[in-house]
Amino acid sequence: MIKDQYILGIETSCDETAASIVKNGQEIISNVVASQIESHKRFGGVVPEIASRHHVEQITMVIEEALKQANMLPEDLDAVAVTEGPGLVGALLIGINAAKAFAFANSLPLVGVHHIAGHIYANALVQPMEFPLLALVVSGGHTELVLMKEDGQFDLIGETRDDAAGEAYDKVARVLNLPYPGGPHIDRLANESDGAVPFPRAWLEEGSYDFSFSGLKSAVINYQHNAEQRGEEINPNHLAAGFQESVIEVLTAKTLRAAREFNVKQVIAAGGVAANKGLRKSLEETFVNENIPFYVPPISLCTDNAAMIAAAGNSKFSAGKTSDMSMNGRPGMELNSWK
Amino acid sequence: MIWLGIDTSHTPLAVAVVEDDRVLASYQSSLKITHSIGAMPAIEELLKKADIKPSEIDAIAVAIGPGSYTGVRIGVTIGKTLAWTLKKPIFSVSSLQVLASNASYFPGIVCAIMDARRGNVFAGIYTNGEAVKEAHMPLVELLKTVDEMGQPVLFVGMDVGIHWEQIKEVLGDRVERANAAFSLPNAAVLVELAKKLQPTEVHTTVPEYLRITEAEANWMKEQKKNDNK
Ligand SMILES: [Zn+2]
Image 1 (cartoon, each protein chain N blue to C red):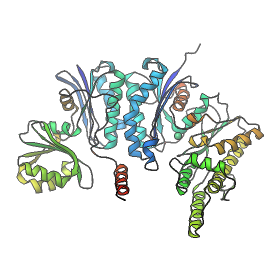
Image 2: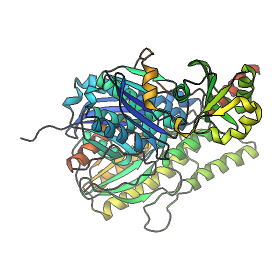
Image 3: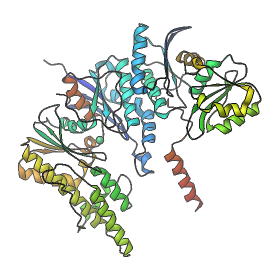
Image 4: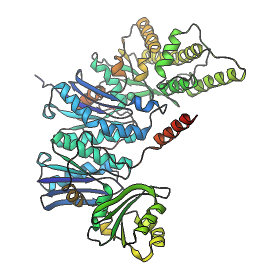
């Protein structure tokens, strides 16, 4: 019988301080997230220096809570996995140095995990991943289409050339004077809307799996600006719905085309924007019709958390890949395969 | 009693292992290697050479700033994580006092500084090892304060050179600067300072930035403006 493998995951790449213990890359034993959102709200976005300061305040408490909720001791663990990048460098460094000190003090192996790999492996906590697998990763920092031919193997087939989807949401929310973070508000307004402003779709050149949202964002800003100059009231619901329709149509169409081309067995959505109701519905309907299994992890596993880092770390650790005490934060880290 | 001392609050890295009154091993460098790459390997190597297992450490002493925000955080994060998981006490020492204590036998004022850009410094003023003042301030203001104290003064820190001409101009013959050997923080000195302190609560041990962030300063200004409306 194979021995169970327990991984402590640590995540501090942006504005959540998180720690979690996952068994065999599948089962969440504990999952603790300390969100800083309240602190950043007043600035209308994440302030990197303040994020780093909060991480130092929280880090040991969060790890302690993860062990406590799991009713485990450091010696019950098999490895420590931590987000190595990408992310805010000062924020990453807190998790990394805490992970290193913890691993060193308890003679545990250390595994550096790519944040996007983490988002994708959140899916393994819900049901077994089947390959080839296509993942659409959408968040405040990312819009990526990743093809996985097998466990631990990543091909980045498409990515945003400018703003991430979540970033575009936040900027449009600002146009509408919606509080930060704006994504959920736009989703709500769009769902309540009885009409939509027609905005362009950024398909880019034929066959491309890349994305671009800056043109759409400018179109929204121009629309609002023109209305203002004419002294017209804009209908925020129509604007939100038009924006969201454009984003969702492009995301869905490109994901579908890639799923067909690579003949995948599973399509998953991950990242904070995967919590968007409109996007979920569009993808679900599309892939039901296409007869390809489609999954989105529950919202708590879509947004940044450490269980996903532990799950990805489990796969990487099982493949024999570990890091040493000289691990540095890698804000621009590329998604590399570990197989 | 075995102490581990860590100072990453500025460009230099200092780590030391002290057993009671004996410095077992000490490491100092002013190389521009980021602390995230350098600090844990240095701790690992020093303990290995001293043949001490992490579990044999009895106390952790850490420099809590001021200094480079990122630098200070790395040392504090390593220190508090080690202290917490090893269930050992943590002692927080001012980074400026660590520097100043290199010159604890100087008869007069010791002034430790770190450059904080745009004419500002993090500065600590000490007499007989006691802090008179530790603050983030314009260098001009520091020099005025020290000048008014009317005693011989010694400047310590690797950034003294950047401002030496200006310092000399204001303080003239009353001022000296520590030589290169005493310009870097020494983690064994840090441990000696920690021995005189009470431990801090590990979870709430955080850097002493001596400065709020720009975003917060602007935000507070905005609030004030709105209050006056
Ligand atoms: Zn994320």
